[in-house]
Length: 83
Image (tube, rainbow, N blue to C red; front, side, top):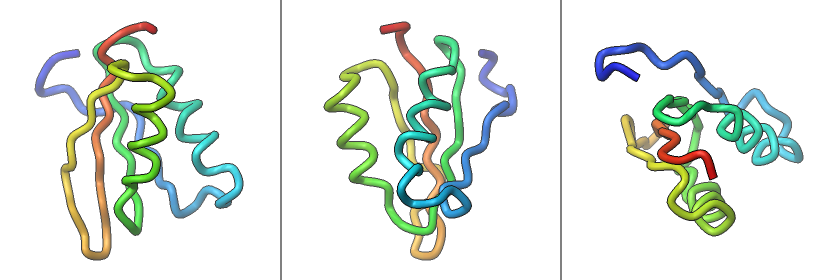
């Protein structure tokens, strides 16, 4: 993906029912082609999700905080490999 391209996917976590939240986010990330990104918006730091993603799919995604609270967090996930 070109460096100046706009992310095609934005995930707004607070609108997803809590019991489906991680499953939904992982589903979106899994559908990303290599080199593409998704932007996760959340009302708290998504550290537990980051730990879970790295434990289940080590090295497949990189992440970068775009915004770090206190009221809103934005994290860009980029798919690094197809595994």
